[in-house]
Image (spheres, rainbow, N blue to C red):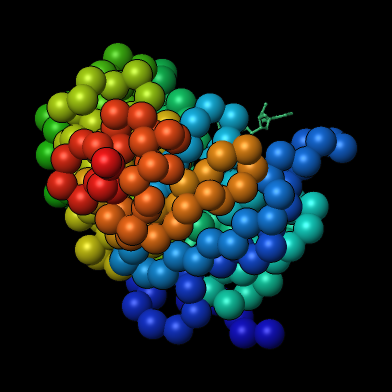
Length: 257
Ligand code: ATP
């Protein structure tokens, strides 16, 4: 069995960063994901789209190691990782920002970043990297994270996630509760992160912004993938049924009749 490449490296060749094959997932005895296949390479952005309850967050829970698949295979960089603990997966380069963000509200921006030195990176390096990519955080370094705007908290969560130089970044519904302009700004940052070689797997219920940066789309409904491909390859009738008006949005979105 091939082992993962060393931590902290970007992966531009070899096996997919994340691969799910014939994946089933259940909560107790109730199966909610019924056999899906997904493959995500370095520098790619895969948007998992679909209506409420489609199973998007459940797939992300499996890919982050929080939920063990009931059947099927989960590979990271060619290594079979079913049942491996989230912290071990994180060390192998899978970094997750759960729905609702992941910042410590009673700590300042700088303190939130300082906590990421547990990854072995020097504080100066963590801060320089974060403030360079997210200048807005530099301006607010002494502010309590809980008092940041929703978009800024999301940026801080991303900055913390990127401190460990992950191979993959998993994002659950980052647009939740945010204004469209802020969402667009976050998605521009995501596109930029992907150009650095990070594989991005994200879920969205509101597809417009995600479709603008996604290189691949998987449309989910009732625990199954109903269409998959580049944004332009998703059949227009399916996009219209499952994504509504968002499917007919801006550049890069699926064609809608
Ligand atoms: P949303 O966009 O509303 O977050 P989703 O596509 O992410 O939806 P999931 O959250 O993955 O969907 O939920 C898929 C199904 O699994 C739903 O029917 C949901 O009720 C169920 N489910 C999710 N989490 C749990 C849980 N912890 N225990 C039991 N059932 C759950």
